[in-house]
Length: 117
Image 1: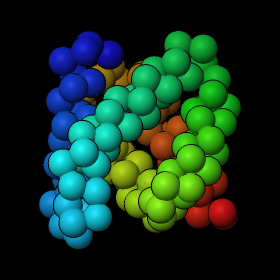
Image 2 (image 1 turned 45 degrees about the vertical axis):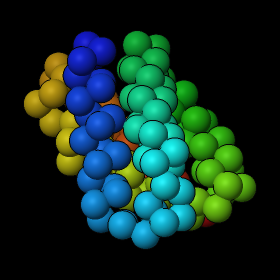
Image 3 (image 1 turned 120 degrees about the vertical axis):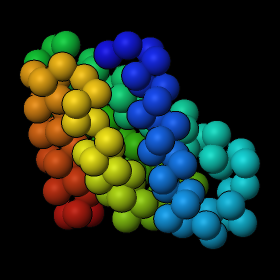
Image 4 (image 1 turned 135 degrees about the vertical axis):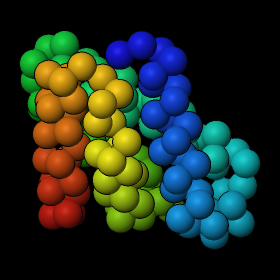
């Protein structure tokens, strides 16, 4: 994935999240918005790594770790699921088809895993 594509996806996801949950501005402010964008870069980095290794477990293990870290910081699991849903909506046609299919599969499996938490 090109860095420009990653930046575009991460920015679009963060903007979409903060538009849907305006209370996040009160709770976390500009610093939280910046972290949300950075978090989306991390999500995409881990999806890329999982794709390059052809191993969904890499992203699923990251998801478990992420959930525990963000919950300890007061971020509800539902917001992670929502974030991944937004990535599912944003990713199509922005990366190669094979990469897209793999990444969408990882995100959907991660959301099912988080739904069990």
